[in-house]
Image (cartoon, rainbow, N blue to C red):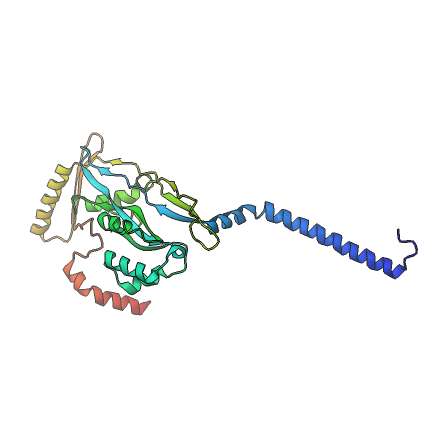
Length: 293
């Protein structure tokens, strides 16, 4: 094959051929690595870029007393958000949302113009207000169902029941103890988009329904709980005590019929300070703590 070709030229041909083969082998290894080792990660990234995913909150399970009287339940509200790539008039959208949601225009406009796939403008929005926004059919504005925890008896068994945070996750009491059963599983709304992040008109939204949480039946009795709390409140006031507790329990099987603790708090406003002295000094405490940070 190389007969009559100078030795120096032969060496150059061999070097070039070797580099070509080496490069081809390297490219094959790299291609195999990308397809096998990084294949799933790259596929997930492509899916993330081509779809818009909005979460649908599940309805948290109801907490009952022993007679199936409701102690805690979830009411229907909504989450209002925007898909930046689909908004046609940012100023108009911000103005309309600010008026309907009773929010500061500048704050809303900043969220509307934020260059992210989906930005939440407000959560726990009253259903009537959410419906009025939905009826406007504003391009890029999304109104999705959500839920808000509600406690019909306000302070009743507050220390026992506990409450949830803004994300409907249990924080204290039975709400956090049985959170894995009560919270349910979120759903999703998936929408395919083009390279600019705009919705493909020929593609419909794909809805994956949430799985609502399980209900919880306790051994508490509302009537006995109310009686225990009233009796405890009188005793605490009469003795000028700082706190107190009463437990009413069935000695045969250990079922707790009432668990009263004072002081208590309003479950629908758990972060409201009830202690007047603490409330008056709260701003001072915050300033002092900020200085120490």
